[in-house]
Image (tube, one colour):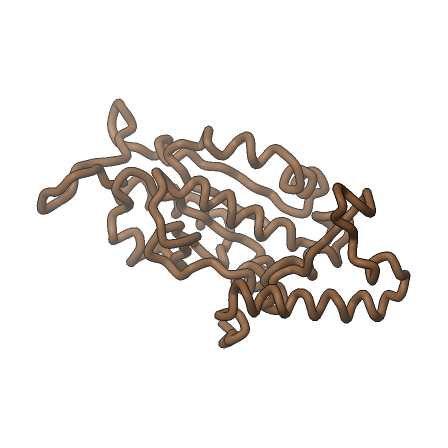
Length: 228
């Protein structure tokens, strides 16, 4: 997989992309992640990438031309399966979406900034718009990192035990069952006996029951999963 991330503040992306699971996946050649500074495609002496809003109003808007140049430059080199814009008014990201997108080969993720981007970029280039929740951040860099992390950890070989990702919350539309490690007892709080029994079929049954109960209490909406 290759992920190209477009941003006007690329330094926000550098450190997280060079640590932990993402870095190991890159080192193994499982994924290639390239960050592009939209300002390199800016206009004039000062590489302008933003301007005031037509019709009046507060805030600055990312201009169409620098983003279009950047996207078209990438498209001239390879075919992209998705060009994603991270935006609060997009579809809310779900694990099922990540499962689907982890199978793609080439993805562009565009990070908005300031007031947002010229609508014509969305009309002409964007194939999918994704939100990480009903709130607004200063830019799309953090959401882009979250999406990237969610995709990379699903790539075979990214994490040590690939079955671990299959038991995460939201896989099978359930929250994860409670998990424990040493010590067996802490200040009177004990690990459930079933987990120490060695009876793995019964342990699996217990985990399924706990996952269902946790979901029923905390996220009953997930039990009405519609397949999207």
